[in-house]
Figure (tube, helix red, strand yellow):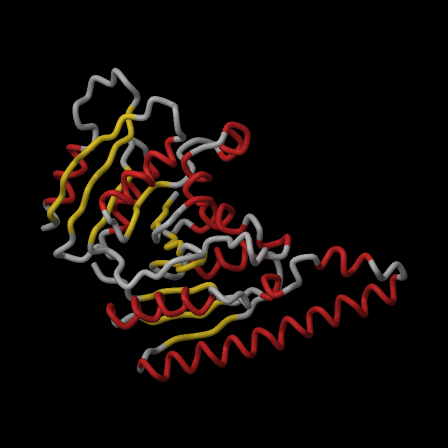
Length: 283
């Protein structure tokens, strides 16, 4: 299976160009159609609530809102021009959308009609406006399609040649492993990794999914690492993946409820905060 229909989420941050470059490379490699998506709410100032707070009168407030929306449309037009230039240079087909309204809902709508959405990790040095700060989590739960999340730092000349698949016996993990087949290079080295607690009786919990992936012609190894609670499971996973030299991590998102992760922490939130390589995530 190949990727035929891709979507990339773009904004005004400096990192957006790197995210676009990766999406362009994937589209070129797969001969895919690429849609550039730039929700206007992502282009509002990070502190736009404070900006609007300076206009106490209703008429003045509406004027300020109109001004911010006009600025966002101008920024979107400039981003669109760069996107279309990139398509022309590479000889790729594509579309453009700059929807208004809630960010996650707008992206999810378009994501449902694509094979994959490429999106950047939140950058603490370039904060998104409030409507966009939880958009990856919201999108993951709402889209029904996989996300390829690109870290806010680092360069990634290859994706899918040395792959780590975080495995647990969950629906989300199975979905992610299946979704990843379109991204994994046929000659890739693939490690199915399970994180277990001390005393776990199953020798290699991921052996069966590793055998399934091997039937797709992949070179797959099943492995496990023990987490004794001294560090978070997310940190244990990312440490192991770094030792592998992986260029792609595949995992299910929100195997536990989002409320539980928000209150107790969890794998999804930990990886989204500390990822150091591209992550394909499915729910």
